[in-house]
Length: 107
Length: 122
Image 1 (cartoon, rainbow over the protein chains, first blue to last red):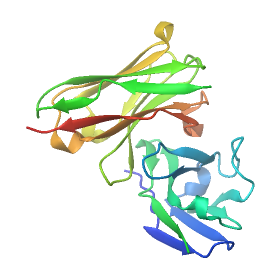
Image 2 (image 1 turned 45 degrees about the horizontal axis):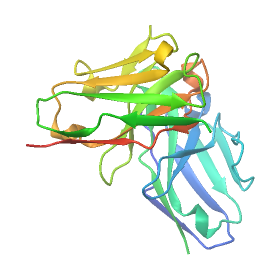
Image 3 (image 1 turned 135 degrees about the vertical axis):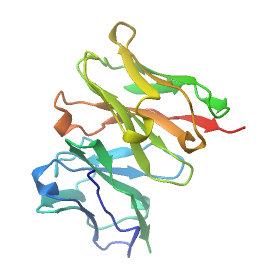
Image 4 (image 1 turned 60 degrees about the vertical axis):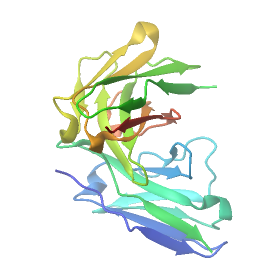
């Protein structure tokens, strides 16, 4: 079955750029989606179809997807960006699949 | 405001059944794929099931096949998840989520409910 792999944690200093990778076999041939989840809250879509931002998501969030890796990049990271981030894709064998999640810590 | 609201969670014994509901306000669910996604305590997101806009196509994660059934009633603007033979491993917050695309390969979830907790324990 298809799987997506994310690092368990990423740390970044406030104001710097954070990058969170999501790897999967030929992930670049699929659409990648990214969600932000803060404690006690439902997930929020922050990137869809690899690199598009829903309305209301700050421009400092951007995504890319090529080869076997999709990347969520957060520039000028703020304390409010501290959360767990999940990638997601669709595969013919497993339908919808989520990555294991990456806890972003803003120092 | 577009909103999804889940209900029907609770405490159930192993082997028991439960039916979750997801109602929508401020948006019409017909025309959209819908999914159930769960999150065990302290764990990540796990997709459970989805259903196409008219209910004719459904998919399930392997661990719930044969036990869970997803359905919808577009006239009632609602989504359901019938869960049978529940196991401790099914303990989780269950979210319903909308995919705004009619192409499942482009399915990201733009609207999520607040979740309903299902606890399977004796």
